[in-house]
Amino acid sequence: MNFLASPLHRKLCSLFLHHGHLGMGSARSSVQNPCHRRLRQLSYYKAGLVTAADLVNYWQDVFEANKIPEPQESSEYIVSHVLGAKTFQSLSAIRISAPLSAKELEHVEQLCAKRLQRMPVQYVLGEWDFQDLTLKMEPPVFIPRPETEELVSLAVDEERKKRLNSAGRRDPWPFPPSHGPVILEVGCGSGAIALSILKKLPHSRVIAIDKSEAAVNLTKENAERLNLQDRISVLHHDVCSGSWEWLLPCGFIDTIISNPPYVFHEDMTHLAAEILSYEDLDALDGGDDGMSVIKEILNLASYILKDFGSIFLEVDPRHPEMVKNWVRSHPDLSLFLSATHKDFCGKPRFLHIQKNGRKNHRGA
Ligand SMILES: C[S@@+](CC[C@H](N)C(=O)[O-])C[C@H]1O[C@@H](n2cnc3c(N)ncnc32)[C@H](O)[C@@H]1O
Image 1: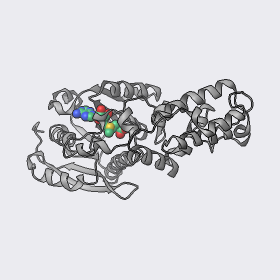
Image 2 (image 1 turned 180 degrees about the vertical axis):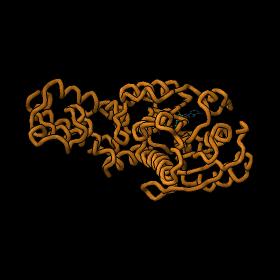
Image 3 (image 1 turned 90 degrees about the horizontal axis):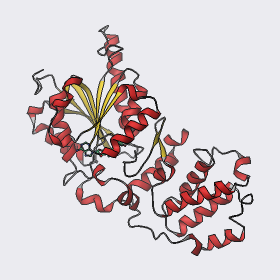
Image 4 (image 1 turned 90 degrees about the vertical axis):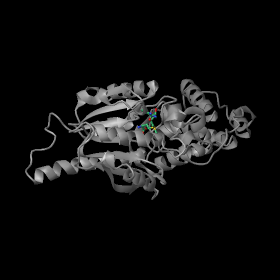
């Protein structure tokens, strides 16, 4: 799907899910809207008379009148979805100008009614793309954000680099083909990160954990839909429980990856109405300093990560300095911040932390 990586997709996701639009829009009945009256005059509800282009314009006007964020994109995504396409641009000229059936009109109306209640368009459609995967979306499981695609790319590039380096040195590949890298994802949500990694690294295995049962179930369902279930173990586990012995049968972990809850608690009230009303807030709230789960992941890493293993984290732009200082003040963890990477908005967003060669807590 092209639109995932497109500026439109990024704009839609970032604007809609991260910024502004505080407070619920008054989801007034579209019947009160002048545009609705105009369309009623056009015999809106008579199938065979209204085209996709008419509908997009109509619902865009209704969304605008009701102060729904991204009115045009919302309208286009919903109409295209009902017509079996990912984007309005991908519909043929004939389809755009052809009249819709009564069933299609009703479906559009049902979905637009949800959007009028400020439901994120990803939940309205029931699916969303992340990298080259189409994932089922279901409230309240966290909707993957476009910047997280870059986190996946960083981890995948690092694994590929290791492979090339070991080939260059004529070392045996550190992960025999049958036993590729073992990657732990903390907080898998819909499975976006874990499943993308499995798709991109065909020899990898992933252990994905989440403290939310809904997330665990959705990751399992998405894994099966994508036929990736054989290389993933999805576990219901709270990383803050302090236990790690359950991971012993997996051996030491090559890489830990996480997009943890990292919003500073005091910032939670500033999130968009779409998030506050529909998404699991435990997926976002990182406590007073946004680091409550991050610290637990780093603690866990000292027990289960291989020497020179990597941790890739998505964080708030204030965190790189805070994490660097925290890691320095905990030398017993044998971790160091090896790189900070910016997101597509130029904000420091991704951390690469590594374990040094000293003994870990398990005495390896
Ligand atoms: C920001 S979401 C990321 C979801 C997914 N990885 C993604 O990027 O789309 C954070 C996820 O961490 C989970 N989570 C929060 N606290 C956790 C904890 N203590 N232990 C395990 N998972 C946790 C949430 O349920 C949520 O699914």
